[in-house]
Each structure stands twice: as C-alpha cells, then as structure tokens.
Amino acid sequence: MKKIISILLFAFLSTGITAVHADDINLWKKSTLNKILQKGTLTVGLEPGYMPFEMKDKKGNIIGFDVDMAKAIAGAMKVKLKFVPTAWDGIIAGLITGKYDMIMSGMTITQERNLKINFANSYISVGQTILADKKHAGKSWQQLDDAKYTVVTKLGVTGEIATRKMFKKAKIRTFETEADAAQEVLNGNADAFVYDKPYNAIFFAQKGAGKLIHLDEDLTYEPLGWAIRKGDPDFTNWLNNFLNQARHDGTYDKIYNKWFKNDKWQKKVM
Image (cartoon, rainbow, N blue to C red; front, side):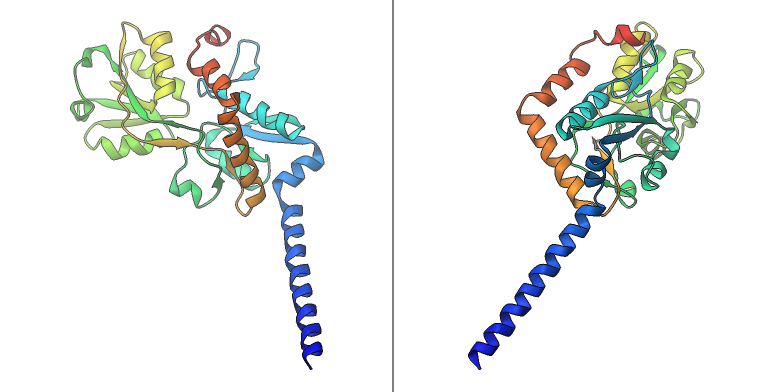
C-alpha cells in the first residue's frame, strides 16, 4: 500500500510540475520580450518635442536622453531599434493596440495611467515648475492665482493636472504642444507657463533670458517610467534589471551627463 501511495504521489507531483512548467512556457511565448527577440527589432513609441528627452535635430533626426537609453536597451538585447513618432493624446492607445513594444517618452508614472498600462521602475524624477513674465519677478505661484492672470500648459499631461489643481482663480488655457504654450508667455499673451522642470530650464536658457523668470522650485514629485502593456512580468523584469545594471556600470551616468550636464546638443536643435 505504501508503495502504491508513493507512486501515486510521485505521479501527482510530476504532473503538477509539468503543468507549472507549461504555464511558464506559455507566458514566455506571449511576452513582448520574446516577440522582440524573435522579430529582431525593438519598437518604441514617443512624441518628439520634449527637450532633452526626445526631440528632432535640424536634420530631422530624433535625438535625446530617452533615445540614447532606447539605443542602450536595444544594444543589450542585440536587436535593431525603430521609433514610432506618436501624438501624445494617442500614445497610450497605441501601446495597448500593439503599434509599438513600449513607450519611452518622458511619461510620468501616475495611478490613473497605471490602471491601463504598466511601468518599469522610474528612471528619473522631474517636477512641475513655472515660467512667468518678468513683470512677475518676486511673486510666488500663489500670487499668480488671480482672476486677472492667465496660466497656460500643455493639454493632457501632468502639467495640466497640476495647473488645474493649484490654480483655482486664474484663467487656464491649454495647448497641443509645450512649445506653443511657452511661447504664449514669451509673446506676452499669458502670464505663466506650468510644465516639467527640465524643459522649462532649457527654454529659459535659450529664449527667456531678460524676458521671463523661472520659478524653479519643484511644485510636484513626478517619477518618469517606461510604459509597457499589462500582464508581461518577463518584460518588466528585464527592463528593471537593465536599469539597475545601467545605473551601476556607468551607462546611465554617461547618457545623463550628455543631456543634462552638457549643452553641446543644443546647437543641433536651435
């Protein structure tokens, strides 16, 4: 009897192990990571126009911090890299419907977005700051929340969320691009522009000196992350391990210093 029980128990465990192994194989077959390796190309969705993360140079080439990180990822996978320029208001839908494998476009990790898509660990944090007309020098953002003032930002981004949350009295206007919104303040048609700190700092250095002021204290905490489709633990695991390795082997620092501690790239886009 003991021998029969042992045989039955072994058979049960073997069947269970086989079933688990089969499930792992099926998950791997469905993983975006596996599909990338099979087709030999990593396809990335982004919206060129967010300096210095992704933008076009004078020759029309897409360059930037996220672009170089994407190149490093593709290099580690030993696959080709393809970019799919996409308007921001449709970029998440494009990921969900499979137009690209991931989003690398300075996207802030939010709970609302996380209901639709997943994120790898944050690779950088930025906060919202304010560019304002120089006539407002010495004022705080609270003093700009007045019905006689107009505050602008980009439509559909965390800057708009922060603007509507913080400014209850001022008139709020939104634009399709951050460049158009910032230009409104530069042209004297708006009083303040709310957007991500890196972009504001660059815009101020390039065009705002003597015309604008930069209230550069972070108004929000915004971790940026690479977005992928839900239900893909293999791809998430790989990206997190890549990021951890890149932070410790000098890859991340080299790319970060190129775009955030050096201004040579600005000559390519100005």
